[in-house]
Every structure is written in C-alpha cells, then in structure tokens.
Image (cartoon, rainbow, N blue to C red; front, side):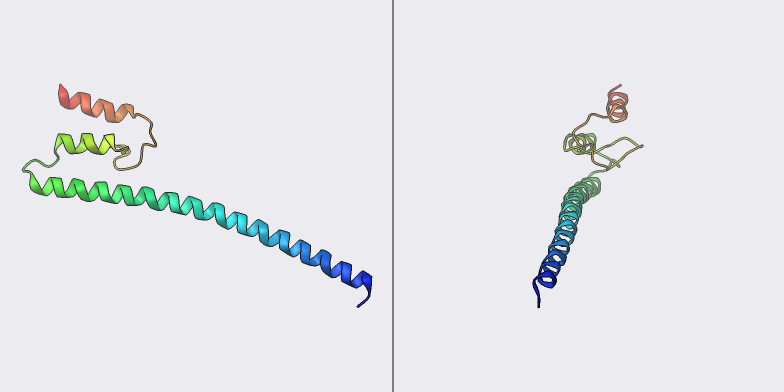
Length: 103
C-alpha cells in the first residue's frame, strides 16, 4: 500500500470515528432523557398506588391530607393536570382547589 492510499484510509477512519462519536453522544442524551422520564413515572406510580391504598382504607373517596401530601411531593392535584409532576413550580389551580376545600 502506498503512502497516499494509507493516508486516505486513515482519513476515512477518522471520519468514521467522528460519526460514531456523534452517534454515541446522541444516544447518551436520549438515555439521560429516558432515565429522567422513568424516574418521574416511577414516582407518579408510587404516589398513585399510595393514593389508592389511602382511598381503600377510608370511607371518603379522597382524604384531604393524601392530596396535600401528593401536592407536597411535587404532583398536581387539580383537575387540569392531576398526577403530573409540577417540577417544583406552584400551581394556581391546585392552590385554588385547596382554598376551595378550606372554605
């Protein structure tokens, strides 16, 4: 193999490595998103199961303190976004729900 062919072959290998590195980075980003989503879904599932367990042990359909604890753990209790993660932000609809219950 002459020098020119050797250098061309090395350049092609470098391009292939760069492409593979780009694909690995894309896969890493996707994996992080999927893991974050999975953790969030596991939390929602646990909270839903706890809510169901609380519902089964009481006569009332929902215990006020169960909804408050669900909200405190970071999930919506309003009818618009019920059960979805609040991501640390307060929700005016959820707060209005609690204020309405207190009145």
